[in-house]
Amino acid sequence: MPEAATRSQAEFDLVPLTNDSEQAKSAEPYDLVSGANLARSRLPALGPTLERINDRFARQFRAALLQYLRRGITVTALPIELIPHRDLLKRLAEPSLFSLINMKPMRGSVLMVIDAALANALVEARFGGDGRFSNAAAKREFSGIEIKALERTLGVVLEQFAIAWEPFALFEPSVIRHETARQFASFGAPDDLVFVSAFDINIDSRGGTLLSCISDSNLEPLHNQLMTNIAEEGFNYDMHWYEMLKGNVERAEITLSAQLGTIELHVSDLLRLRPGDVFEMQRPDSVIVEAGDVPLFRGKWGRHGKKIAVMIEDRLDKDGETVDEQ
Image 1 (spheres, one colour):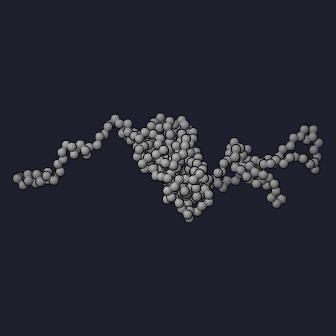
Image 2: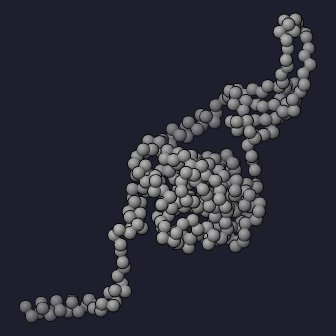
Image 3: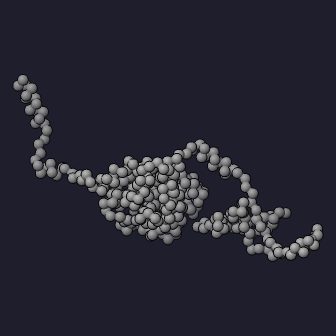
């Protein structure tokens, strides 16, 4: 019995004793009704839906970027983080292109970040480079030409971002301003929690990271929708079916038509027409190439060998306006 008491006392002596002041220093205050703690508790509920949105954006952005750059491209959505605004600004690397976006009707601003490695890969791919002379590590400001090329890519990002969110809200994105220093990229209070979505983008084995940063307070009006499975069916897809459908659409044949000119005739003149009659008509400066009454291209017509042909000059949108290829 005395031996057992001795062992217990020895074991007890191995535990270091601390005074009240040391215990106070090691303790961390935790407010059960703090807004930050409540917001953190929502991540498990909002996370799955936000991940589906990010996966949808990654697929659509890859397809749009592939059409824009004509290079081998992969876009991978990384896990979502919920971090304080102050910590986010500390983690942002320089140089990067920081773009503050207004997403009407969402209140507040959204931050889009294109890091230096991705910026260099995008600019080089846009102007035909092959990656032999990489300058991704250069600590310098972006040139005017580089920012112009990145703005065009950012337009593609915002277009696909709005489409990915369509099941929950109809956003109208517009750029507020661009910054290259992170201290000017603030879009909230230091304690605001921010959902950070990162996308790893590779262009011919070169690339970097695109960040989408949305404050939790900005998403608050959409919390009920994001916590339900309203759009779950819209995100479920079969990759095999998707690739098969994509291949069949790319191989589909369509009939194109172009109106080479018009002429006005009275009905009496039309009735007097005989084989061999010749019309005099003015040759238009350009013609529109259509498919099912939908304008696709604008070009000039002439001859190719013994056939009449149209040389394509511009690509058109559904309203017949020229699509900017810059």
